[in-house]
Length: 162
Length: 82
Image (cartoon, rainbow over all chains, first blue to last red; front, side, top):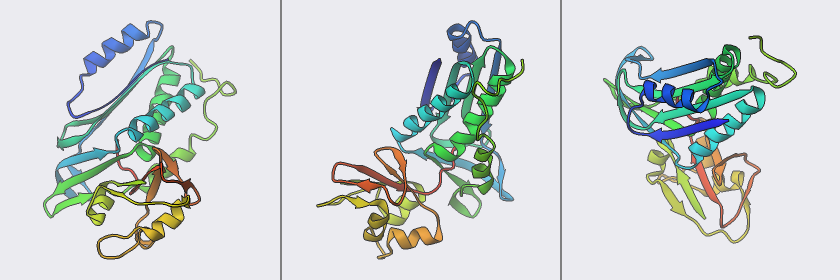
C-alpha cells in the first residue's frame, strides 16, 4: 500500500494529493478525503486561532500504527495523512486523511476509522485563543467511545459491499 | 533517563524535559510519584485531577510499564489533534 505521512506547518494542496494518489494507485476508483479545519466557535466562545504542538517522532510512529491497522482491515491501495502544526487561523486546514481503494465502501470506512484513531492516539495538542485568553483543549469522551465502534470491523470475515 | 513533558503539562512543570538518574528500573506509576512540579505536587497527584498519559520510547505505556536509564519517557494530557 502506498502511504505518505506528513507533519508540517505549511498548508496542503488537495489537488496535489489527488494527483499523487491517482498516480500511485491507478486501479483505485474510490477516493475519500476528510479535511478538518479550524472552527470559529468552540464551547460557546469565539475562537481567534489555534496553536498546535506535537511529539516529534512519536506522532509519526502512532500514525504509522494506525495505517497498519487500517491496512489489515480493508484492501486499501493508498493513504495520505497530512497534519499541520504551529499557529493556525480560523478557517485554516488542520488535517487531511485521503484514502484510495478499488471501491467507495472501504475508502469511506477506512477514512473514518483513521480519523477516529488519530483523534485519540496521535500525539497532537491544541491550544486555542479566545477572548478570555488562551486555553488547552480537553479531550472529548465521545472521541474515545467512537473507537469501540471499530472493534472487529473490517478484515476478510466482513467484506464490504461495492 | 530523559523525561519529556508536552502541552499543558509542560507549562505546569515549567520545562519541556528533565534528566534524572535511575539506578534500577522503575515503573511509570512509581515515576509519577517521584516526579514533582515546581510547587512540589507530584505527577501522581496531578493525574488524580486531570488525566495524564505516558509513553515509553514513543509508544503508549501503562502505570505498570517498566522503564530504565536508556528509556525516553514522556508524560502528556490526552491528545486533541485532528
